Image (tube, rainbow, N blue to C red):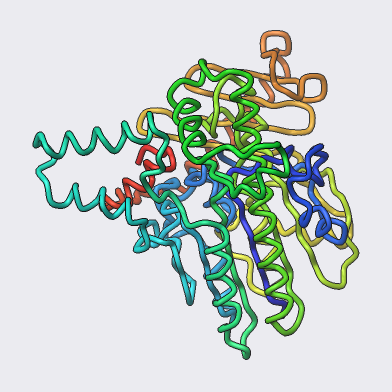
Length: 451
């Protein structure tokens, strides 16, 4: 059996990647890596945020299936569980707490690091204030106000939203070196750095600008883009994009370290997949970050699959991230779970056979469900009682809602979404609520999440 390496990058939109045609050299290593890989140019997430997207990536099922993305239901099968059953030594390393053991993502892993017990000194200080002071008291409220005012006005990074890419890579290389030599290996590594707050090292900023932006200024820009997106100027958008691209360049350098480390340490061949959980908006539709709008800037992601002994290729077929786990399980010699809704890409890679013609996305909160349908020609989005339809061939930026001009197409896609909703609802189960401690909640807030 082959070793398996899965690399995921948070918030990496496809059109900011070199091999996707981006004019900047954000991904020099991955561009070179793509030359011998299978590159899928029309790959889409099934949701617009980490929490809702990852069930598709790691369990090959849609976000709202099996009780939703609140946690990983026992009825889902994680890739780690399928590969553990196949005899793999399994490890997962990341620092997004929505993917942590509290949400049952650790199942099937022999080693699992989610950084829950590794906050920064400032985050520890903030938590100590919460733990030791009456949260209704004057002193507590004063210190809390100071924390937030400091970040907003001065631009100090007061928390530890995630573990930096070089540290995650160091942990991964330690794991790679200590892996059981008698078992095939599966390693999943998730990099958070491309997610805001954007604080890339200066050396990577200087690839795209003459002078680096200070951390203080970066934090100020982040606050403004989240709290006052309508007031962000064109010059500030340009600065924010520079920071974002520099983070991609930084992540690319660390992915290079990781993949080269695997080649040196592991015997046998390694199937490697590199992708992202969702993209990022820069006022494409008036906002920043990755809100649940289902536009392509937040849904379209890069996907590379390198298979030793197979000549690489380019594919413009529609691929969903729920096809990734079945592909790796297939090449790893494991069994496909009945809970998988994706399909292995192996027939497409080896024989050119592929029958996916549509992508579905979904999401919900307490009082709303949202759905989207996309094929090569059309995109249909349903949000609350509003519907929109975009002609993706003539309007790839999704500017003009043409639903009133195309009633027959709208009716057909509406029916397709209705059938998808029935498929989702057929798996419904009650997961209950996840109890999170205050440290977890605070770090999720640092990433812009509302837990």
